[in-house]
Image (cartoon, rainbow, N blue to C red; front, side):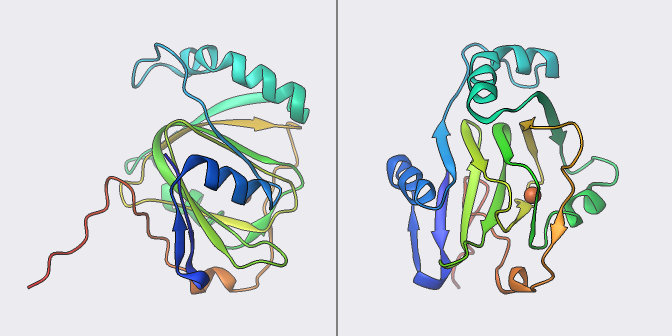
Length: 185
Ligand SMILES: [Fe+2]
């Protein structure tokens, strides 16, 4: 389940309804959705089939036309270059829609009139970040994510960078199950 942190306000949210409300007030849709009977590591076509009811619903709501499965881990060739494209503040000309199937990731979002917040997503989380929203993305230390992406067009999903440097002020640190606080002494 997701964890939302607002570093400037020294507070965090872990309750699903509270997270959904906070995000909704900033134009971002969030919900939990898990398919039945999908085995870990199932082929991409099986993943898309298992999520078909939710994908079809989202296509109707948001005008998305295609879906694919992105699947990376620490051994993925070119992973650092791939991640570097998205780890500084940017926006897109279309929505960023992710249904997390396995692994975890960390979105930072920079609303125009609110402090930056971090939303840590994991399996079962569905997030829709509207086009034009300033954000950036990192993997967690385990560098593993498998997610369904939905697109409104087959082209045009290029990051536009703000070059604001805001992202430099926030540590890409996750606090989920793979995080262990250092012991004292
Ligand atoms: Fe993005």
